[in-house]
Length: 78
Image (cartoon, rainbow, N blue to C red; front, side, top):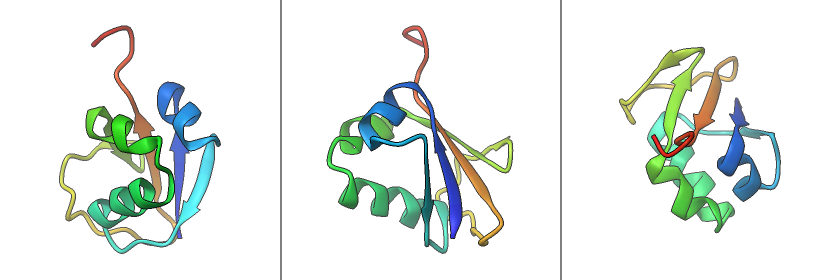
C-alpha cells in the first residue's frame, strides 16, 4: 500500500491528512481516490503529485508498498 499525504484543499476533500491506498501505479491510485472520495473528484485534476519527494506527472509510474505520494493542490492561485 502506498502512503498518500494530502495538503490544503486536497486534505479537506479527503477528510484526512493521510491514507494508505493499494494501487499498482499513480493513475490507478488517483482513480481509486476519485471513486472512494467524491469531493476529491473536483480537486485531483488540479493537483501536482510527488512520488517519494520527486515531482511525478507520469500516471503510469509504478508504485510499491514503500512509496509515498504527496498530493499538492495549487497554492495561492497558482
